[in-house]
Image (cartoon, rainbow, N blue to C red; front, top):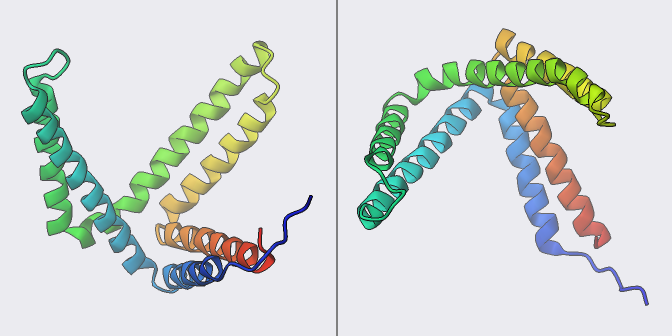
Length: 170
């Protein structure tokens, strides 16, 4: 028996909100990078506080070392630095992402022949994904604001998918 599909107004509303966020990301690329940097700072701060609390709660147990505390403190310090200089870090952030994606792509291309020798059928896809990653990473390094454009387009597509799914009842 087939279920009746009904529109989901929340799915539609959230999808529209996500689309609007994506449009903003595309229209204000540098502010988007600053926002991403601040979100990174919040995540690092939370992770650092969590590590410090782990050390405080479990320092007498095996596996919890002083390095847990050190990592937590360093992470909190990095987060505080991000909060104090978000504009400067927003200008560096795209290059870090671009270089990371380029290195990932290079490792995929270099590792694909090994996958082929081992009979892994997706080795061609790995080369393709690696090349796309290299191109994307280099594009972001050449023009850092493209990162915001790519993120904005991705967010718009996700919002469209959510809205369409809400309308069609999927």
